[in-house]
Amino acid sequence: MNTDTFLSERLAVIATIDPDVTAAGTVITDEIDMSKYRRVMFIVMAGTLGSSATLDFSVKGGASSNAGSHSTAITGKSITQLTQAGTDESDRQAIVEVSATEVRAQSLRYIEGSLVVATASSDAAVIVLGEPAHALPATEIDLASVAEIVT
Image (cartoon, rainbow, N blue to C red; front, side, top):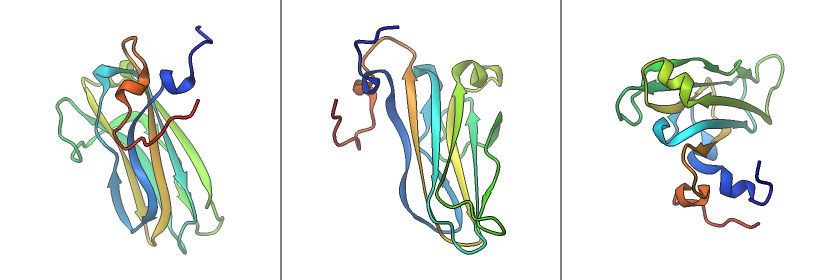
């Protein structure tokens, strides 16, 4: 392993659900073409959950590009529901890692994350980091919204 590179050169920011108050409903990350990545990591961040709110997250995919409309669940790629009802699970994180091999095994190519907030508006965000399938600095494929990288 080359230790002379920065982590920001090995992992690209490839999709997001920007941090904000999220109304009850479903929010989808940017679509990801898994032919470009070995692995991706979805980092789900729950802030303050509204009264009795629940938060679910799963990864869905499709064989062709169809941003926002993928419906095939990627096997085993969902989190245990976070809830404010009973035990307050506000201010938590969950990580879901998906490999290109797992996606191909389901005859799929494109994936996206699906964040479902139910009952009450809640603070939430998702950032997706991708390990490029080909040797190149990951900074070359970061989302255009990445404002700055400090190393």
